[in-house]
Length: 299
Ligand SMILES: [Zn+2]
Image (tube, rainbow, N blue to C red; front, side):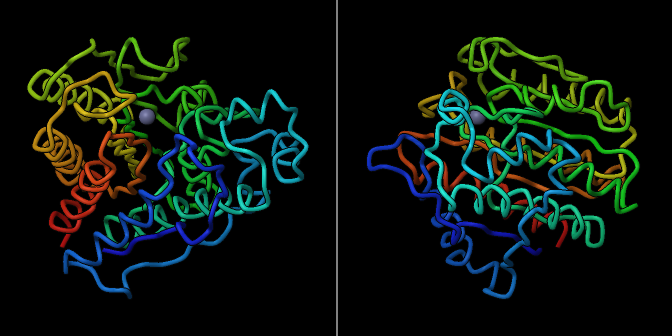
């Protein structure tokens, strides 16, 4: 299994910033340490071009982001201070999901060890999301002739509002989000399928809802590619989560997504999305488990 990483493209943050940036380098280190991957399995992605980004974003927004000309309020909504590093990191992260999709289509599975920035809208960002890598990558695969129909399965605990908004009315890309009802974003968009869960929802109820959602989503989407946002934040000890999944429940979540893909022989590109556990090692463990399970499933 081949993986794309972007943690070497540092997004400079002030000390004490609440975004757990170091989870990405720790994830790569953890995957190397587990013995199931070698250095040769980790690849740097290209930086997504303006043309690639513009399939999902307003050219004026791309221009403003890249030149550091976003209004202060818009930059604040993203939650990162502007820097050249922020732009490069955001382009590379979108590039990594494009690369992972291309490789998944060839080999069955691949992953971006970051990405899943699903709160990015066509003309604005929020919640630590600048560009919407899943929407950009889905459209890239269509433009390159690699896929006609794409299903985005978003299991981050927060609704994929940007993805839903960008892809509203696009019948070739199906958006499925399973998330906390009372969590950010407080004004939700309409995905093609939304499943809203109550605070405290634990493994069994979550997995029942997920199974039902996956069956519906695959039947309606008829995808030839899945992009899976494997957020670590439904975890019970996540600071921003509000749900109560265990390590075992999250691993079972991954297995169920993968088994739906494999049953229908649909390739899957994985992106990490959120994870804000009180102990950063817990977030890393959840993300690493997703990648290791994918490798075991596809060999
Ligand atoms: Zn999240």
